[in-house]
Amino acid sequence: MYDEQVRPMNERERVAIQRIIDAPLHGYATFKSTAMWVALWSAGLTIGILGLGFGTQFNIVVSILMSIVFGPVVLTSAYGILAAVNIYREDRGMRREVETVTRDIWKRTRDLGMVRARRVLAHRVAVVEPIDDEGACCIFDLADGRVLVLRGQEYELDECDECWPNAEFEIVSTLEGDLPIGVFCLGEALAPIRTMETDDCRSEFDVELAQEEVLAVNFDAFLDWLTDVQRA
Image (cartoon, rainbow, N blue to C red; front, top):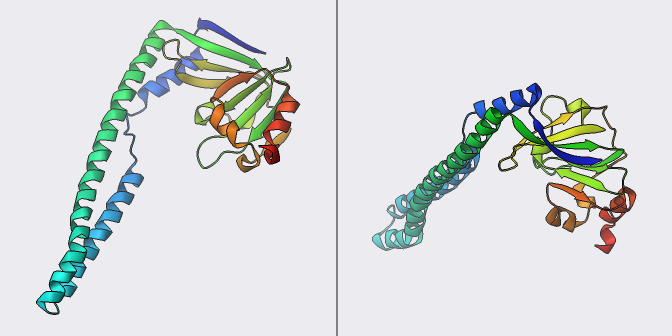
């Protein structure tokens, strides 16, 4: 079963949405990625300076040749450092603007007290292991000739990992913008009948399907299609 309804927010969901509202704003570009670029360009700058210094130990001709070779490296490195800093600042500003808008939606949702809830009753589940930090993919058998595909970090539980995947749960989001509030388990933990690696699945599975999608297909037939890589 996969049934969507609009209903009043319960206390569990109110706590979850307040936690989202209270979370600090952060920039899109990470410190790690920015530091990597700064380190790269700094290394180039250092090489350029050392090259110029090395050239001056010989005659003027060698020094000029070294300047021709390493001069562009020095200038490009300096430009790269400034570009990395500007990109970091611009990305951070854009991310803050987006987060401010979405935070306003969550606040209005809290004040309204109404949410969109998609109730799921699952018979079986299969799991595709995540790549890096993308989040696992769960494929649920809805026992009515349909399957529900959920993938991505927003469908992973922070507080009750031992009960996920679950035989009965709700996917709760805001009415405005359909922003995710959380996945809330209501039933018993459901052990996967099959666990697969991403590399063992068809490439179009990752490209063509949305993060949350209901497909009118038999569960077993879908798993057979998904892992039939040789025909893909």
